Length: 344
Image (cartoon, rainbow, N blue to C red; front, side, top):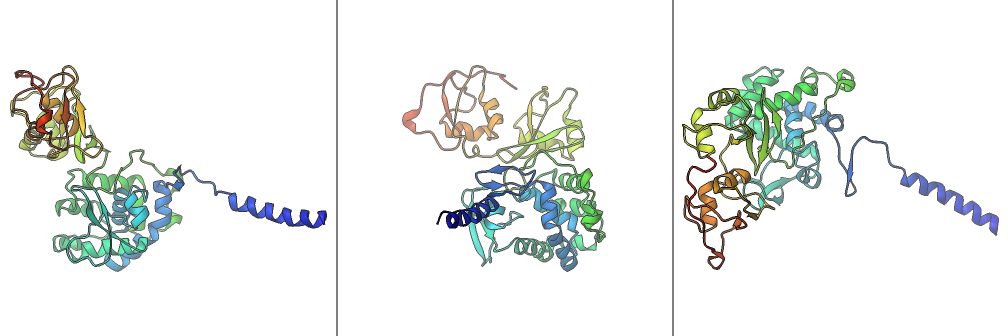
């Protein structure tokens, strides 16, 4: 009887060991989900991009770069739970699956797919059928630079650095080999460059990249840079391809304003409220309403309105400022006098 039990136990032990074995991977595991890096993403999905290139004539490099950026290399919630790798919203007429996420507005509708390929195919159809993208198909299908610039010009994303970002990802990761009929055998994995800057959500306006001189950050889904020594409004607008008035308007400053090293400078319009998770701010010594509005990417007029304060007045040290909702009238406290020319 003892021998029989031993023979039964040994096979069960072997099976148990096999089941618990985990394949070796450089990817990180979080909450039982194994995240993948860009190399893994390219290995997994390059064939889908090539397949769509043959069907739609959209360069595979462009498709892959967009998918990697907008899905955080397949790690975004939208990609993992809904197979949506391009952040495409429902729009009118969408009859497929739906899922809701907070984006520019709360509880926005995004498309949900049964497979990743459905997402790739729908992305191709979205561009092919969009009249504003029709001029792209007159371009050389291997000219990924013109395609990237064309997508930005057509308004695919509001980020002013979108084309730069796509080109950088394509070149850093040699995605152009797929446009020329290449395969993984042509792909030099030993020279693969991994970008440490993660895209937090499937949001094409939330990238962090490098320009020629400045690193472009994102706060409250708004692009901004940090002013460096020697910067001028002219040098920044020329570097980023902006118009001079945009910097003054987006940052709510006068045309004769001076730049200060370390200053936050937005290159997109600020929003009406702070992002989720930042409901209040406790004022610290030396902080002005303008500085706080820049800190959270909120229009200063909206910050005054939310806190029932007169424009031009300044908060008291320790005062709680509302950043998303409007302060209740019962919460109004005495405000300090105006501090002129503060933090300008």
